[in-house]
Image (cartoon, rainbow, N blue to C red; front, top):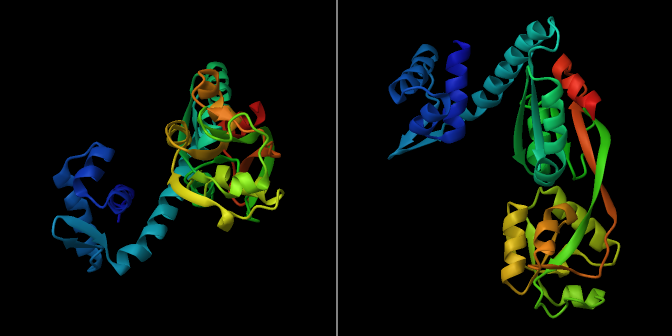
Length: 289
């Protein structure tokens, strides 16, 4: 079993497609198929079922996947240790961030660090808070940046910034320009970010302080991005709860309006794994914040 075989297996397991995995790894499809077949034959274990033209992980494949990811994470950590024996002329920082942080807070800081350290590569993967935390827990990211609550004792947490959630509607919405009440919010329709999103979590925490529970809201739509959520609010008779940072360009363009219903400020939090040693590049980026 080689590291290359493990990388190929993980790529196929994530894509559930030999062709897409080959494209992601910049390999030929026959090379990917051969690597998977070699793993299966060597250990006399089927890792994938071929269901028509689709692939599905077998039970053995599902059990093997987290182990393969952990081995790859350890191998990458070992490689970073060797790189870190040199100075900061080389290195890599793997960052996972929830959308609001990734789109509106991190880019300026990443660009400034990259300008000061041209030999350091910064890789950013964007998701929601739960996905960013999972990447740090799994060793796929050195640093995580989230706006949601993190309840993982193995992760160290540090507040690095702040923003505020606002409630936004189209200019023609019946609540636009009004001082809204609890009853107003409970008798109109909503579009929200998906479960696991720090934006949704923060918004519901703010509404809870007003005595409003999530199950009392008329939630018509859920979206996996701030832009999609704001477009729904602009085009429909909906309230969207989203970061003021994300909404600012559309507010300036007159496409949406902020309701007169202030919610509490929230924190941007950086998370790191207590049991994993940060490389010099990641530690330098963290210090730059």
